[in-house]
Image 1: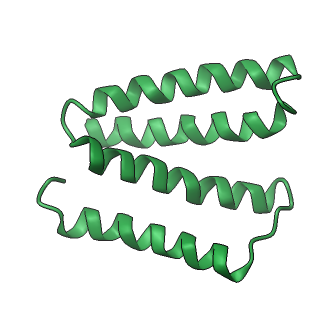
Image 2: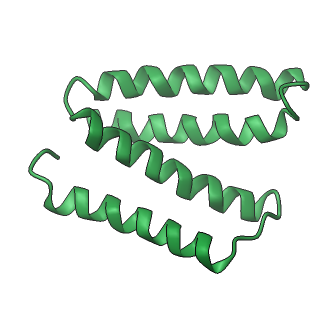
Length: 107
């Protein structure tokens, strides 16, 4: 169940960060409310996950996948293009997450 909670926490973190961009500096009430609620749910679920998964592993997966999803959303939704260095960095983040999941005894 903790992996499902982690996946949902990543989803809410991604929603919250997307709404943060849409909130225009927290000046738009609707998106700002989504930011607060989504981050609250994300952190609550992450806290539940930390009962089972070590904090370093859980946070690496949570933040790493969040970065990748937000970069993709920025590209598709907001037209924010990534250069070669950014794409390489994101590839390395994904590789790190794969290594953690495949080879860490703590997972």
